[in-house]
Image (cartoon, rainbow, N blue to C red; front, side, top):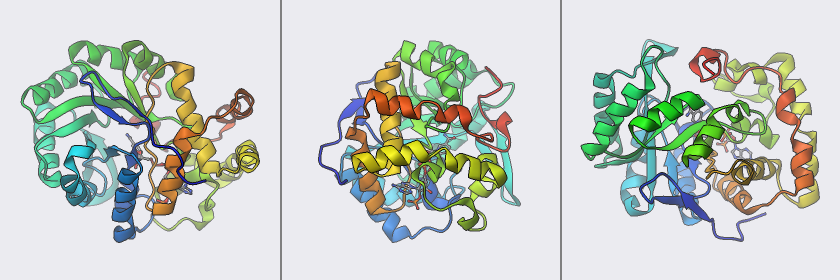
Amino acid sequence: MTNTQALPTTALGPDGTRVGVQGYGAMGISEFYGDSDLAESRATLERALELGVTLFDTADVYGAGHNEEFLRDFVRANRENIVLATKFGIVRKAEDPAYRGTDNSPEYIRSAVDASLRRLGIDVIDLYYMHRKQPGVPVEDTAGVLGELVAAGKVKQIGLSEVTGAELRAAHAVHPIAAVQSEWSLFSRDVENTVVPAAADLGITFVPYSPLGRGFLTGAAPIGELPEGDIRRTMPRFTGDNADRNAALLAPLRAIAEARGLTPAQVALAWVHARSAVHGLPVVPIPGTRSRTRVAENIAAATVELTADELATLEPIAGQVAGNRYADMNFTAVGRE
Ligand SMILES: NC(=O)c1ccc[n+]([C@@H]2O[C@H](COP(=O)([O-])OP(=O)(O)OC[C@H]3O[C@@H](n4cnc5c(N)ncnc54)[C@H](OP(=O)(O)O)[C@@H]3O)[C@@H](O)[C@H]2O)c1
C-alpha cells in the first residue's frame, strides 16, 4: 500500500505547534541497527518531509553527536517546515561504548543545549527532551532549568522521556510539558499504567518511540541474522528462547496484514495510531527507517483504521511478550511507578 491520503496533523504542546501525526526517528542512521547508507538515509528524510512528516527526532547521544550533525543540512534547508526534537541527559564514555550514565545537573543541561544547537546549526530547538531522569535529581528542578532555556530563546517547547505519570505531573506544574516520549507499541505497553493517563489528563502529546518494536513487529530479519554490534543482540526480548517465543506472537498481526493487503509494519503502526482515540490524547509515533520505500510504507499506515475486531485480536500480544525492553531496566521509568 502506498500513500494515498495526506498525512493529517495534530497538536504538539500548548504553543499552537502542529505536526504530521507520524514523525520520523533518525537514531538508526547513526548507530544501533547496523551500517547505514547515508545517501539513502538523506533521501529518506526528504521523502518523509514530502509525504507530510514534520516532527524529526534525534538526540545528542545518537552516534555521540553524529546524528545531530547528519541532520544539520537537511534541517537548515527545510527549517520552516520542520519541528526538530532533540534530547539531553544520557552520557557516555568514549573509552567504553557500552557505558550509559545520566546527567540532569543544571550546568550539564546548559552546556548540552549549546552543543546541540551548534551541531544542528540552528538558533532554536523546537522540542527539547530530558532523555533520561538522573536518580536523585527532582524532575521539577529539571523542568525549571528547561523553562529557563525557553525564556532564553534556545528552546521553544520541552518534553520528557521515560518518566512516570507522577513525574510528568510534577514537571508540568513547573513548566508546561509539550510531549512525553516513551516506548509504546504492540510489544511494550507499560506506559499505559500511569504516564499515558497523566498525559491525557494534562493535554500532553504522546510520542511513542520504537513503535515497530525496534523492527521486530515488521517480521523482518530474525535475531541470528542481525549484524555484530546491533544493539538488539543485547536486548532480552530479542535473544535466546525469547526471540522465538516472541516471533510466534506475530501470527495475528500477519493475519490482519494479509487480509487487509497491508504489511505487518503498517498494522503495528495503525495499532499505535489507534491509541489516540482509545486513550484520548494526541499520539505521534516516530518510527525509524533508512529506506525511502519503507518510510512511504510507514507513513501510509497513519491513515489505516483497524476495526474493533482487529484491535481485539491484537490486544493479548503485549501481555505475552517474553523478556524486558532493556537489559538494564533501571534506566527506564519502570520501577519508579
Ligand atoms: N527516547 C528514547 O529513549 C528512545 C529510545 C529508542 C528510540 N527512540 C527514538 O524512536 C525512534 C524509532 O525507534 P527505533 O528506531 O528504535 O525503532 P522502530 O521505529 O520501532 O524500528 C526501527 C527498525 O525497524 C526497521 N523498519 C522500519 N520500518 C520498516 C518497515 N516498514 N519494514 C521493515 N522494517 C522496518 C528499521 O530498519 P531500516 O532502518 O533498515 O529500515 C529499524 O531496524 C528512534 O529513531 C529514536 O528517534 C527514542
